[in-house]
Image (tube, rainbow, N blue to C red):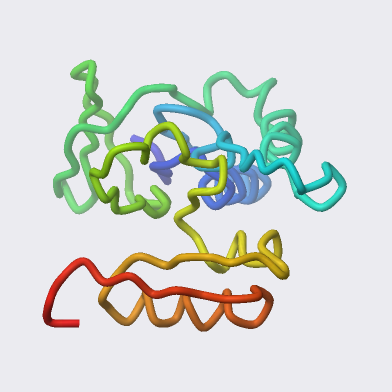
Length: 175
């Protein structure tokens, strides 16, 4: 039984694993990939390399700390989590059942796809899913925020601090 299983290999999960190892916990990092969303890069023609923090560079630094510890990571998606014997049982997609006294779920955020033509082709080529992360790249640009909820309003407000113009497009009549 592990002291701790961390689910998710993005920056939060990798950081948690490094600190758990430093505290000499018997830890296992479970993830389908190392890096999470940092593996995706926004490619805009007007953005210079020095303006963007590369997620891959950060993840590689984390990875180098974990690389020599093969026993501390397992690259496989998690299928199910349940309580067992006062702790937790984590079942992987391949069917392995791993037990731990504690869990950290650091699976990150998932963007809500719109399902419109061109979305896949333009994702990370001007179409982004995080106003907070990418607003500085749209200085003096005309932008569009799609949504009809509080997050869309907050995103439009965030981008409006730097963009020349922001359009808010609502997908439903109620907005």
